[in-house]
Length: 393
Image (cartoon, rainbow, N blue to C red; front, side, top):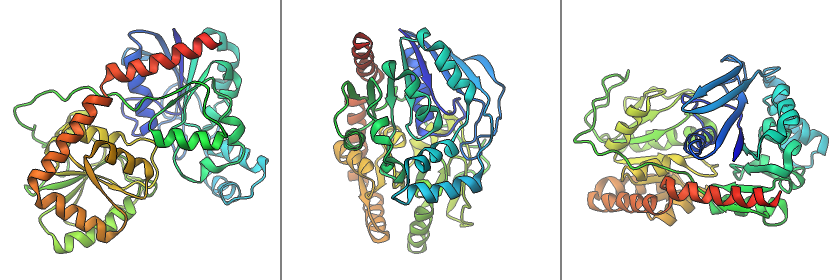
């Protein structure tokens, strides 16, 4: 099949769940299908400023066409329209304005979809909340497959999404919780859909972890709690810092290591080490040496970080207020959840003080990944949906 993949940002150095999911699926499907990624010249989801050249490139064996963003996001205007649209009771015009201001504004990409829709058997769209999907998908709805990456936040409650969620010819969901959420907002179950999750390759065997000398903040010999991804309030990092500083005051033998670009201030604390963006090699080394991986986000459609941790047999500590995280941990039986500072402390104490139980939870996570998330199984799920959608056109 000839497939188009529409995503707001693309590239190996882009830190974002939907962007990573799109890239890895594109790379794995490109051996079986003719895949073209349609994306923007932006690398920053806050400003949408053009940062890389427009035009066609070949990346990881995948054809990529980048289109320029016509205007960067007006942060003041976006804050104003967000207050109007997300507070409840907004008009359809206000809600549509929210998608326009959220961006990215990429008219050339939309025109490409209009003119070249017939060049693609199917066109997959990542994440419902950005303008590339909201305004692009209706142009090719009869051959569109949506990967909504929907979370239980204010945006998914916008009233105009009921009609939008009924447009795609098919859906690829990341978790059962996301499937339930979108089906409820659409008012019915999708015609063709599958919960596909995320594919992972087995971790290569290594005799010992590689040294972390390239990092600006080498790790101390003490055990560490690992956070991977954007350091961002939207990811619950402000609460993580609060809870960890309270914990470290009574438990000085643990370090919190952060690996990912920072979008907020990181506390100046001797037991918090921020590494910034790290390479895949360093990322794997960090996972191999971690006692526990923490995921504090209140909103997720799927935590790739959880799957990566379990791929390394590392148990997880997650925000129990997030149904998706709680569901992932329960299905895998590979970690603990917290809903308060007190529960954070109790859960982390248990994991650190019970080595055999911690190890058993990690192994259960690995078994779950082996059962559900290896690439052959995920690719088979995706292929089934794509074939069913294509035959229905």
